[in-house]
Amino acid sequence: MRRLSRVALLCVLALVAGCGGALATPSGKVTLNGEPVADVSLTFLPAANPDAVASGVTGADGLYRLDFGTKRGLATGKCTVRITRYTLKNGKPLPGGEQGTALKNDDKKSVRITYVFEKDVTAGDATLDFELNEGKKE
Image 1 (cartoon, rainbow, N blue to C red):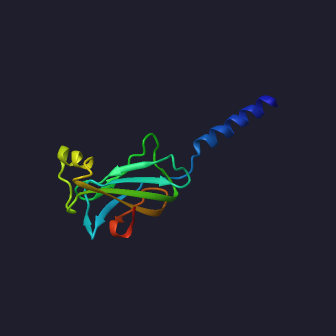
Image 2: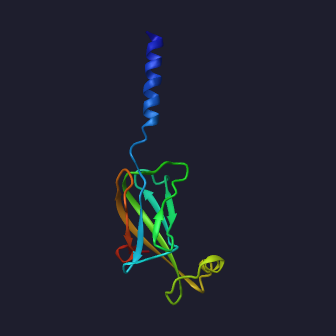
Image 3: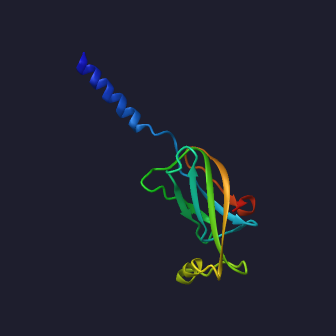
């Protein structure tokens, strides 16, 4: 009887350990005035688990896919999304490559703008698009 209880307990623990809840794998597009925005970074911070951050960068077409680190997805529910964009002081996009990377670190020549969104993230392959004008600037 005692052995049966231990086996049952181990089975329950194995089931609980395997059930981390539903996960989301959001992707989508970032735009400004309806136009795609390249080279912006996105950070998803789930309210349920702020340490389980997912991040990504947009391509030239404004599309992003997230990197979940060692996880298979993002926790579902309320999520703060921070989108960071760098521009030249005159508002024009940074050049690509090493020159653009160097300018990001030069506060005299570039501007860092962070937009904050609150989103409800649902399980599965959700599409979450962002129009930067709709975000709250920090």
